[in-house]
Length: 467
Image (cartoon, rainbow, N blue to C red; front, side):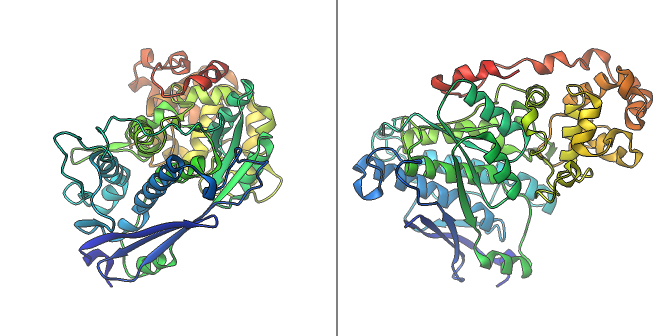
């Protein structure tokens, strides 16, 4: 099969039994691709609420679980759809209600925008999930009332799943939740040793879920499939929605900052954002969908949404117990040894941005001990930092802050004697700074929180602990 010549992408089936969700997909009449998500079976005292157990669930909770599982099937399919991007999408159990189709159309279009840009594709005419025709009386809801009607209230236990990624942001969120005494569990998807070490360091209960991609996907890649970036945060969010119903949690609190909503660039009239599924638009779509289709008392939010990357980095600079454990490096995302340099490649945009963002808030010797070297005194890294500053290049396709944030941080360093003579700071001062408006370079405005967020009332006290 030639993936790029296929005509239909099919969602064939999804099921759950004994802690394993199976998600089936296929192109045309080809062989089924089966992904498996493994949810650990836990002792009743560790994560489950009283009376936990699928067999004992009331009908409302069984319906909620089925809805969350179906959404996981539909969202995780993005990993496979991209292999061929055929012009037709087929869902085995029939068309979707309008709210679900809207969510998926937006996710596949915007979440694959970087993939489309890099492969010179236009997906706007291709992505259209099958949808039910709206009823004049019922609107486009679940067949009961309108699309705005609430799902049942499940009386989920008041505790929070906090995704851990191994980097600074999720650790700031963890400590904010711990500061108000809220019950929480550190959760991650995959088998990263670095993330496991960070989760253990938090002192919270931990939950590790495994995702196993269908082996056939790698065969499709060998056969010439399209390949590229997918919105993995959306997939993980759908996995955690299933986990919240399965184990009993009333909130999922990511650590996505407001900077994540800012596009990387514009391509043929479309905004391309590497972090789209970390942005506020997706958070709103998914949060609203969970309230109307899964459980009225299941909240999905980002605890750090009001804050810029710089504000979060300032907060993290106070969390010294994590300095020898965290890493945001995308090229070296394994704990390879005891030395801090083992966790930082020093070459990727994430290393560059985290170094630059921490520099205004940490003593220089402390920062150098974390990274094992001074990235701002290495002329060979000029092009990488230029991209962060959006100087002669666009912002990198990575989870980094806005160009204006990077410029504010670099300007602050250029005014400090201990940093001013380092090669890239001196270059900024002599070559780039004369092209900028000094009035736009202040650090302080980036440290102020915005008002926009979806943090549920019981967690809002945690916002005051960040800063």
